[in-house]
Image 1 (tube, rainbow, N blue to C red):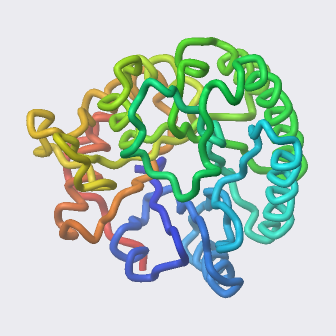
Image 2: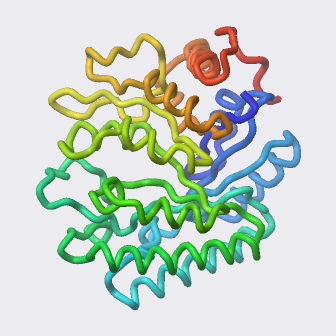
Length: 308
């Protein structure tokens, strides 16, 4: 469990920390903290309990901005603004010294117009464009600029840049330009989200989550792990993964996904991006033990004591 992480989104929640975090866990991923005081609480907790921190951009909540940086926008001004906003956040989080900073990619999301994306969660219309608004060649060129910039900033500020897949179109899952960039910039890694992959698997007939996991897990540093139930509608998003959640009832094939992850990249970190408030502390321990058993062959015993 030394590679396991929990999330703290919207501020540092001591109750969630003491329920979710275990002494042998790696660390915490933080996002959208509302105040300097929350950020300082995180720094002090990291020092006290000895855990590492990652940042899911942005660290600071700002209602005046979109959460995600639109660094692939067709608009030159919007792209420039995105890099400037990231720079401001990097300067702010120097005292936190995060191990990694994570950004959604591609952003804006590039949508296949033949797919019904109405169930995909977008906070703002600016977060997505359609294929006819950005060509594959433009995406490649903008991505090269992004990779070069993030690689330089990672060295300057001593963090690992991570790109988390958002909604994907054929530019990413049917072409190899992104693999070539990941090979050219090995300091930049990916984050794969099991709930998001399963959702696209269900709505996009050209997309296969298992195939994508086999293609890209080797380049991943992080897995965002949670379950979701999809039948006629999407239900129970960000539900903790448990062995009894059956694929026959519409739940994601988490055991299959974890098996691929184990085969392709045994060193990847697992961030439990779930709502632990939906289950008991006993079931949460079963969740952790089950994942540890699949990935590491550890007997399914409850984890040791929580952080104190």
